[in-house]
Image (cartoon, rainbow, N blue to C red; front, top):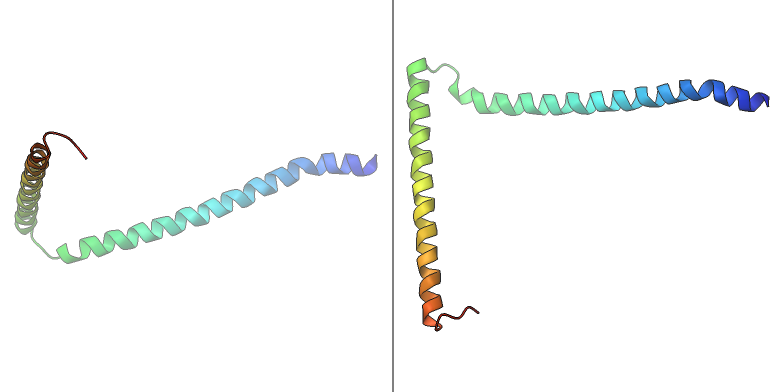
Length: 97
């Protein structure tokens, strides 16, 4: 009876200790993730340090133009692939393999 009473008395303490250990592990994991993200952010922003606002604006506009060019190129490639697919399809009498 005594050991049962002792176990019951410690059950809450054991549960709290287990939860505390889990919380500590989670905190370590989150800290590690945050450190990695900060390092990654720094590597991305480093090349832009020292540039003026006008220079940054010009870079962002250039990046937007590149993005639009890439999207247009991708669109043209999709159109070309579709044309080729349709041409192959017609060459087989309209039957797919």
